Length: 249
Image 1 (tube, rainbow, N blue to C red):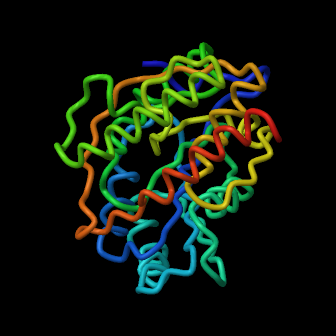
Image 2: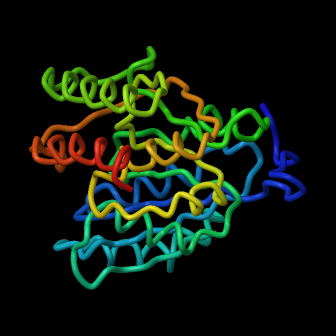
């Protein structure tokens, strides 16, 4: 496994910034932060830039509790920001990216669907100089919870459409786990407010001719009763934005 001696140009890669959008995740927040703190990251320092997107539950207070207590004991740098009104996942990711100090960023939802233990696999193509970005694919053979058939079909359709417009051959465009060099992520000039940030990132990586890799990851999806938020409306929105970012922006 590549270690922290990797570099971007002449600048060594020393820190990973975990961008964590949060909306109504009080039940899982402390556990995901513990998992991030415990996760190996190829010798890199880790920071979490957590953005509470005007949660209606106690998520923000729970984040502050963790920052005041466990974060220090676990050696985790935790930066907290809060939106005064709900603006969507994309907006929270953009706010976190503004505050990131690491040379590489990875998006991490605050639920337990994605496992931080897989950071090293996700980071490897970037740290060894092959990639500018790397996606964790739920469809390349990793262990996954069996859930909604039509979600699977929708994901495959949106990925196929995105591939047709970008000329990538991705298997999972909609994945949350996207690791990107920080300088590249900022150069994309992201504007997405909600879940449309996923096709936006992919479209702009393609337009910039950035090197994109994909690795298999596990996935522990949750049901709507367990707090899943994405709906068919977001799928329709993604379809529109795939076309928009290819032709109109």
